[in-house]
Amino acid sequence: MHPRLFKILGFSFVLLLLFITSSNAQDTPDDKQIVVSLRMIGHQILLKSKDSTSRVLPILKENGSYRIRFENEFQFNPEELVSTIDSIVNETGLANSYIVEMDDCATKEVIYSFMVDEITKSDIIPCKERIQPKSCYSLLFTLIKPNKPVPDTSQSNYLWVVAAVLFMLIASVLFFLWKRRKTPKNDPNLISLGAYHFDKRNTELIIEHQKIVLTSKEADLLLLLYNAANKTVEREVILNMVWGDEGDYVGRTLDVFISKLRKKLEFDSKVKIVNIRGVGYKLVMDI
Image 1 (cartoon, one colour):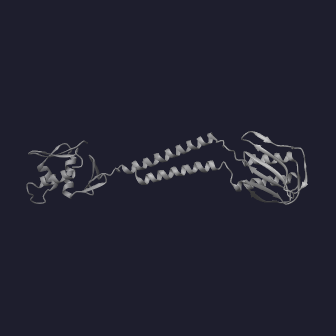
Image 2: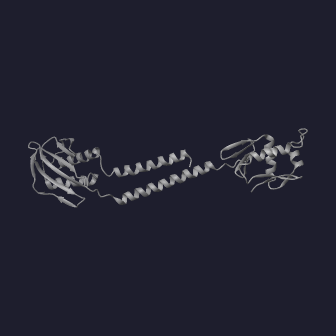
Image 3: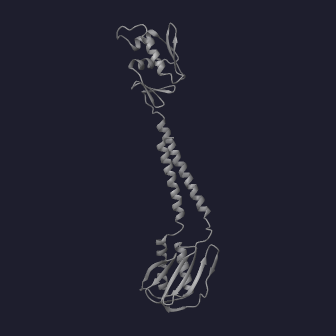
């Protein structure tokens, strides 16, 4: 394959791998997505406490966890808190497993906490019905990373199938373009001559990207023999057709030109100019 096409194919494959990697990476939300989801949680907690005016303060990141802070005091119902957070987490795809701790701003004590674990299908949600008094609270949200992630094999297999199909399509297109580029165009001035291509217009032979220049007489002689391939052309006919009335020519002029043509055609043993003793010459080749 042409080196340039090979590089294009390799670059396309790298892009496909990046596509798969980026698709898998989207399964885990980044910090910005997490912050947006947590602010939604903070907003809903205030609304549940009948507060629609005070602010949710900037989210802080603490040792891998995220703290939601509030401008004003509020009270909360643990059952509503669990339901609100779980609803937003599922809606935004924030996490499969997480721990929530509601802390007292002054004492830093954990007033209420619970855990949801979708991986093991176990939830720890205590005392859901005990309404907590109005006070200053902050909420610490921790995403639980399982020791052994459970891969989504169906999605992974689907992505690999898509990647394989795209790769095959790209490879097919590149191979087609390469073959098209390699195959000579249907040029009326280009004659297939065994392993050679005979360019009548530029009077040259082409073999494996190598060009062999012919004189105008050599080109005329070769064309005459080609048009009568595998048939004997008499010496008198050749002399008249190629040299005509250009003047006197020595007896061995034709033999010299034949010898030169044979040398230039020696790269393909299947193309030969045969001497028919006492008659003329014949171009022997498979046509």
